[in-house]
Image (cartoon, rainbow, N blue to C red; front, side, top):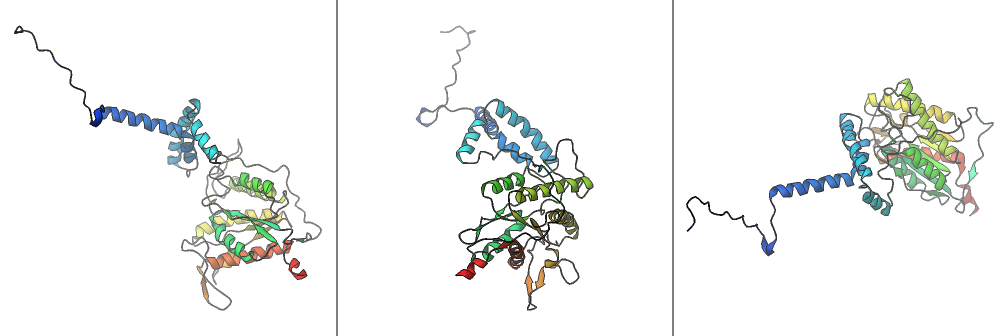
Length: 349
């Protein structure tokens, strides 16, 4: 018998086990493991998170996101935890997905402003010598671009590329999508002789990225904003024309929002004046009065030649319906035929 003052020996609690003898862990251990896994996942994907933060609209949410993801991306790079993501992107052919490209290359010298002695000779294209056609821009170019593809489908002298329409992009935010880099690549690789562009639907804001170091850009429409946007429009035009391309720049249409229309006018005036500096190489297509009512203001329906009202504009008051796309495509084709002979090959048949 044990002495009365001797406490009984305490046994350690038996380790809990599940089916098959698996050791069961506490809820606290599971939470720790989950947090470690979450932190590891965040670091592995830090470059993508930082890119997503960068391309957000200007504001406090973007500032906070950049403040969080910037250090995470740095830690991920230091610990080499971003390498698996890079390898996977490379294997998928998307090595540059996480790059934040804001480069806006400036052409080496300005184009001549004096008008040429006469209109350029119309270059002839045939089914054996096809005209390469590149159509690109923001979401506004998609419907007219589709109409243009249909309008040229029966002409074997034209070889169009698929429409390069990118929603929510423009010349203002190359960090979201860098059109300057994209257009330069297309002109260098594919060498299209005809290019149709439409930009500006997403560019009526104050915030720009890719601004040269040491330069500040004011609010939308200010002299500094206009100067920087003009530089970007000129860069795109010169990239195309110096590669041998002829550019048709489609102007922005009247909008249901009168304030937005005024902002569109700012960008239209810049594109129109820059096109005028490049006669025979750039044509500006003014779409404003295509879609204006009898009083000169916005209208969703326009009378056709028979007097029938046709819905031209989408319900958002900005984008186009198919008849509007067909109208723009016909006018673009007229511009192309002023510069190129695309039909005489048929007469020899």
